[in-house]
Image (cartoon, rainbow, N blue to C red; front, side, top):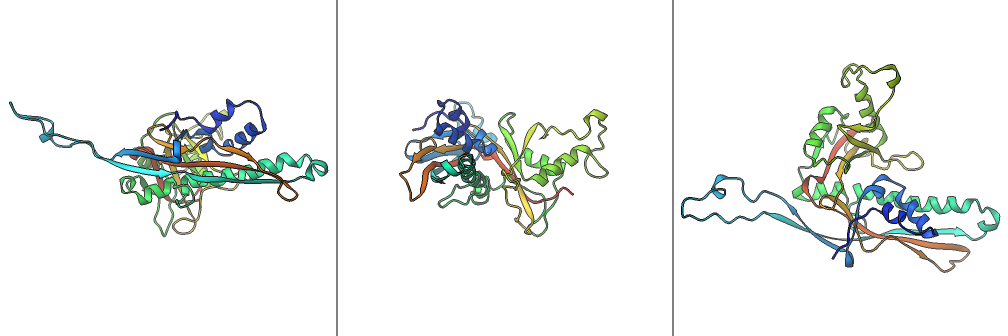
Length: 310
């Protein structure tokens, strides 16, 4: 049994002003995926869904019948998936003496610790390997045969390759692109590589002429799809840049939606007050969640991407 899908940000916006609302807003605003991804609340924390893996038939023998003949019975083949939530979160601890010694530091400490937990959840949405953590996009494509074609190589395991328009186009050709629901996630350098391609210099991209007032402008999109750079508050890339040859990264394309890529949870994110722990005042944030790829073409990755502009 499930309820309608809404994002964490939507939930927080509709809450009355409170400490809990501020905490959930901090968590949700830490990264774009946590802001944009819909979450389905599943009773019991176990989600089952089916993914269509082929057409019911692909030949003329099932599409026609002879006079007084019967049609050939057909059935659309599907693959059943079952996944359970993972218990994410952590304990936020603040020394009670800060109330008198440095009250201005209390919001900094609270927000910084919450953002750190949200950062790890964001990374695992893409790179989580299951177990006690989220089973992320990379693992789904690597491990599940039905998704095994949802990748493009920019280079090889031994030598990373720069992004090109052809590689980006090939990835999008494999993907179910839905304007307003599809996003490209990547580190900073690949995003700046796409910006460089948009300018067109020598052999890199098109030689496009811009008006003087457009100098340096870039709308942050490729083929109408927003490019989201995943960096934390320190400006550090969230996605791994040690793949393949040890210096490569991965670009992910995701389409959110009830029938595409979605999160699911066993209840909303909780803020649980704790009794005094030694000299620390503490509370837990807890989010029982996981992700589900509900159509084959809702997730795609470009792997062995050189984490560089040129």
